[in-house]
Length: 533
Image (tube, rainbow, N blue to C red; front, side, top):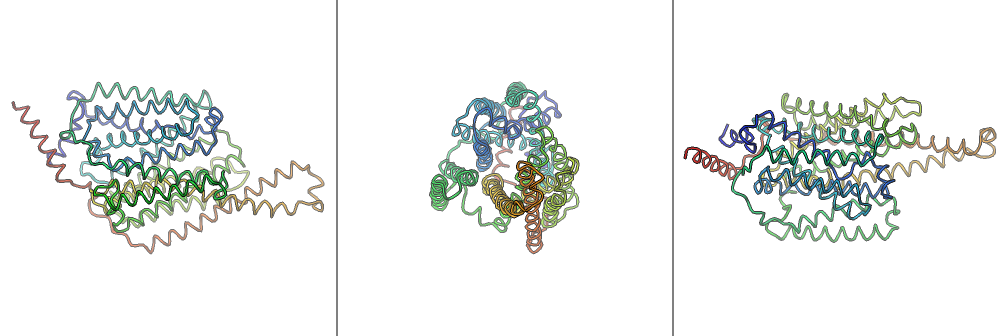
């Protein structure tokens, strides 16, 4: 272990009297609090719609803006870490998230809500990175990404499930505002404990934030937000028949052209062109988009089934987060087992992850029934979340092997364009459109039998058989679209089988940066000299 590793393993941002278990526990608790302190909580979607008079698309747009903010901060995370100490970063993040929670719970202005959620996404990612990077060597002393990434995605996806449970129960028994109050209270604790436990420790002399392409970051953010707008509001505005959608597409094209021109013609662009040229980088982006498409069926079809057919209330619907949390645990454990312990190839682990996702579609296809009980949904949800976590872990680990450190965080940002940015709204819009077309076709096909000659129409009232017609058309359509998802998944598995992957290396380690290492060594020698004096 180098002097740099020995220093970082001690988590030196804390005061000397703080024990090691408290250092690691505090940083990990901050991660959980930051991840559970988003600008909006989609589990309280209906309550927020009723209180603010906003549409579902408006609140989802704010949620997509938060994901875009999470993505766009990646290229400058290390610059921020070298500029400010943890004692400053954590209170700044907490204060920003407190302001974000107070604004989102009190405004019904969509532009204000969208900008606020974008800012809270940036702050959440900043605070999470600062804490995880500080305790990385406590998690894996060898800097093994096959150990580190399962912990990261277990925490992130686990917090999504837990925050959904907390939001639903607080909204049901009290008000949706109480989740924001709880988040504010936890963030105030972060501020107080940060000032008490941390010291102003700098990893190196503060690095000025010069030379960052802020304009490029703004241009890419606008492009992603405009594309998310198009696919989020497309069905509501009737797609290309709407001047809003056409204008948004034209503006997205203009800003994309400006972003590409800036990337090609300035020396240090926010995302450099070399980022997109690494081998299999496009394949990784495609696999993440395919994952988004398979995951969209759970939000569109499963939501329509549990709400429109089974008529679950909010507590029953959110109780499905518990098996979802178990699936996150299973996926993180299998990722660690396959990559770190058994050192299986990326191709095999990716294939297994997508097999789990396809099995979810397959099981749901045969489970769709108006008489099913809630326990039957546990297995497919475990499969889906386990496969989701496994794919995130293996593809991110693979990305760390094909992209050097210089462009790694830019690569995470570029992949995030699909992973957290526009992939979600595009996939949801695609599945929603297919479901809508299928529903209309089945509705007219089944409804054609209900005429005056059908003996059923003489024994049942019009509202009765009309309601049953809608229910049966929805059931058939949900099953049919799940079938399409199964076929798509099978084709995807065949694509993975014929795609070449590099085998996992003996040790999956974090990149070594000689310049940073020398700076740490200089800093350490200065501290020892001061102690001697």
